[in-house]
Image (cartoon, rainbow, N blue to C red):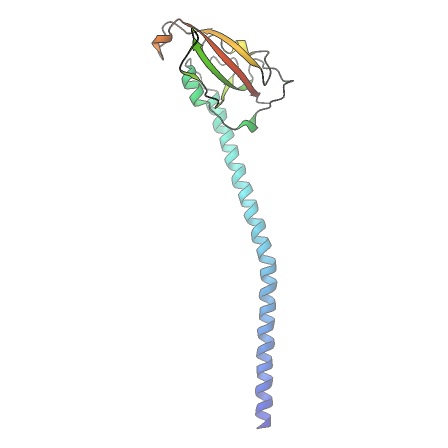
Length: 181
């Protein structure tokens, strides 16, 4: 019987050693895999974020190049809340061909008109594109980020987008938020 007990004890110890070795291997794998998975997840998140911001930049570039004589449509089409894309460096100067981000409030005879404001949302404008009513964009040339500029412009006659404004002079109080570099 002693031989059998010794044999059973040896087998039990062998099973315990095998079990401990398997546990050690599992622990090593976990210690290596968890940080590896975290790093991979981080790289995927960065790649997705980069792709999203790149596609947003492409979309903003496409909308800012459209032409229209309607300030209402242009403001809606070019609205961009991403202030990180433009420079607010006051040493920069608005030049013909620059893309700027502006806020404005328009009024005729001292009364604000519907659709004549960005409501603080900001809008992108390419200077010289002709997307706003005549003489609007040219009056912004020479301004700097942070400047407030009074822009006087006359609506075309007829002005199909809002017949009440046809041929009327408007004052647009414009703030230059920044210049895209």
